[in-house]
Image 1 (tube, rainbow, N blue to C red):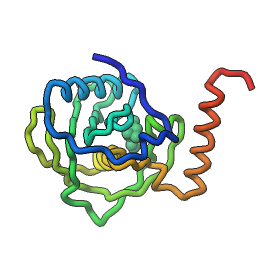
Image 2 (cartoon, rainbow, N blue to C red; image 1 turned 90 degrees about the vertical axis):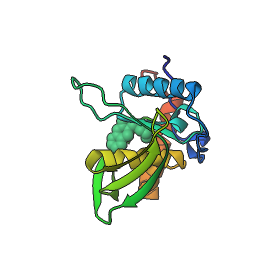
Image 3 (cartoon, helix red, strand yellow; image 1 turned 45 degrees about the horizontal axis):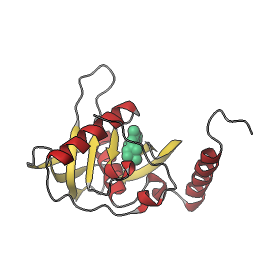
Length: 174
Ligand code: GNR
Ligand code: NI
């Protein structure tokens, strides 16, 4: 198991459309395990492969709260098969947009079809936070960040701060 470095915006690799996974093999399962370990360590409730520099249509999610048993979800080549007209607003954050949070409006309920880590085709319905996180992670597979759902003004304000924070790491003088 290994912790993988998480890319931070603005990074061109976060803007690329990821490629479909061709085979669920041992190499991919190792990547899934490393992504889960990286997500738990961050800590985060979701992580998409492009965030660790791997351009594959693969994501992991775990909404279990601290103290609850782990409940890892792994989705390979996920596709939304249904979206509700009803919308929901959540304050979103992103491990690739550290320390910035903003309200994002998305469909409130979805159905998503995917391959799991045992190579089985699955389809689940999701609402609440799970529906939001699945959509947030699937956006990453298409090179979209939650910032892209905000006004240009808000997005550019956050991107400028991220560039500045990179030039001046936490704790540095000036
Ligand atoms: O850890 C995360 N929390 C979160 C909160 C609200 C909506 C989406 C998320 S996903 C985020 C981890 C992440 O960046 N996944 O891509
Ligand atoms: Ni994210």
